[in-house]
Length: 285
Ligand SMILES: Cc1ncc(COP(=O)(O)O)c(C=O)c1O
Figure 1 (cartoon, rainbow, N blue to C red):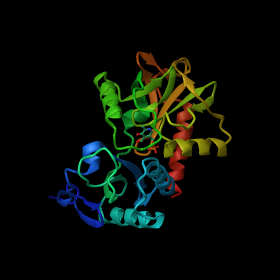
Figure 2: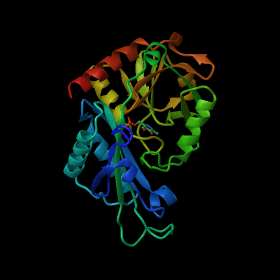
Figure 3: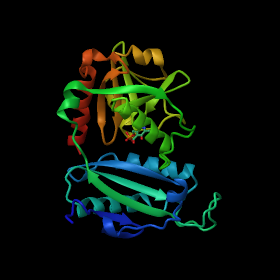
């Protein structure tokens, strides 16, 4: 097997080829989805916004009462080593911590011994098709739990929602809860309305995206009008522009929502301006 097909991964203290990485079937991640994760984009072998990802990891671990097994510096060193053990220039690090192996019982085990896993994959650039024509999305009822701020590996609702979107010929789902648009199945939501950016406020109904926070930061720095408030379904339908953001997809321009064409079917001028600035931040790395 070539290195690309069998990359080096990190599992519980060791760097090993992917095909040698095994865990017990009694791992609580496998049995209960009892764990959390992060996905960190890496450009020219440098992780982007790693501090923000590690802070969110800490918050997710605290929320599910797993003690962070490594210090910030140890995480940074492991991530650096993993990046350099693999050949990809731009990649994304996936890291996952579960509550470890224990006899199957809902209650936490008395002795905690978390499983730590990290792997890396190539980071795909945005396609020319997306840059020119944007993506189609559908709106779907947000039927997830009330702790969406935790980056939990229990992603079954998100998986089903995204599949529903794909089955309808769309690329992503925008989720609606009680008449308000929360986020995508794997992305955060921004709209442009009256030339002002709007994104829903952070809270238990959405993941506090690292990309979302950077866009809010950029908007403040560049005196771009931005508001953090709830987005009603009507506001969503009347938006001049709609964007979906994530660390691996950056800023996706939405040009079709259900049967409605958004922004004349082309990524809008606000998106063009923001994506340029976003890429400049990456260059500054
Ligand atoms: C549900 C959800 N919301 C938002 C995001 C975007 O977060 P980030 O920008 O930190 O990648 C993700 C990313 O995977 C996600 O799964």
